[in-house]
Length: 501
Image (cartoon, rainbow, N blue to C red; front, side, top):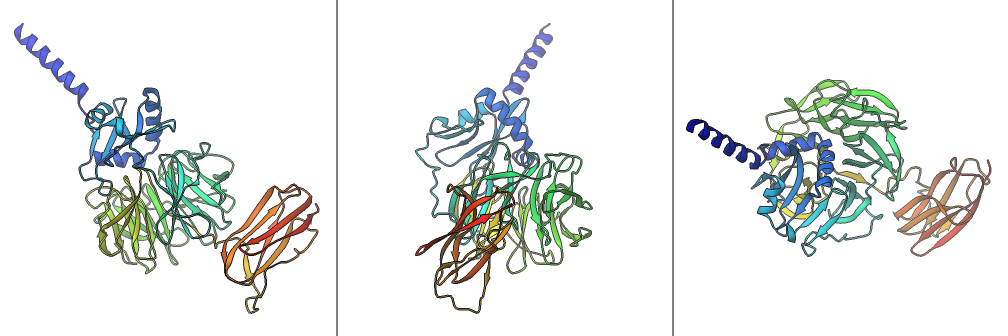
């Protein structure tokens, strides 16, 4: 009887310890699972909302505590104490452990419904350094608010915290934002399984791919995107019927099927080069694989020896290749030569997702702690620009890439500001608009209807002196009188045109 009693006591003690024990998953596995399958974050938000728990906690001393998994029906938090080296002093905790270990009452709390309670006294407040629209920008999606930030492509400074605002109908975990040849922004989203189109003002336009509606047999858990030379879109796919493929879409977003499928294993990003295409694979033994421009497999570019969970990949100005390694002892920014031979590893920031090299030679990198600038020579941390758990890949927005806006009469010296009469006029549905500026200046050209409502914006940037022309297509507008207006810092002129259908 005494033996039975002892066994019962031991059983209940074991049960009590098991119930109150912390999460069993390791920090590294917790982070990797969330990267591979962000749908976990959707389930986390449901639980967090039902229990009124924060999904992210930012303490005054800049410890980040982010909900990244679920274990036994409970939320598991990743605790990041070093925002540059996320594996240094990291831990996994349930909410009770977090509440005991940290002062929640003086922290910044982010809830699943978008509420933010900031008791840090503004520790995490950020102020954009300049107005958007004049310089090349780096677009970086962020999962906390499901929006897209913009940074100056020369200095790396923050420009706009809402270049593309949160759009619940489209964005649930935006991974990459890229400018397409029509001067629109395409954003890939891992949870909502689509590529979405926005204009350069951040306004939602439509689902771009798959054309016709979300189809998880085509796109499911997509990550990085890129464009072929013919402007077709390539999309990495991590789950579903098209798992471990690179899907191709034409310029209207219509599916053309798998472009690559051989030796692709949970792909994350695509790098286009003049003679081949490189793809990062987060699973399997081949971290980076190389393909011919027609999509056929060429060779293995990097094996698993130097990398752990590669995410973004870029071709640098000197022809070298940078690869962001997210997990493991090899976490950091790896630099290879053009043949895949390792050159160096920058470990000033770990847990890397995305990277971009600035003209200075330094790199901007994203990880689970924010966006940082590191030395292009030593890899040492220079500064942390913005703190957040969820910044993703970089994409370039260049206001100089304007469809159809081209300089004309380059051999002629322009000595005046002038807005010319469009031709033909009346027109249906296209007409040509020409203007000239006699010195380098900020230029804006917009189209308005008869009641003054803007219906088109074609130029909004600094241009060199010269004469320019673009084609205006009014296929989506009704017949009537329209006005086009040229505005610079020193000049303004408006002309009338007539659309007859």
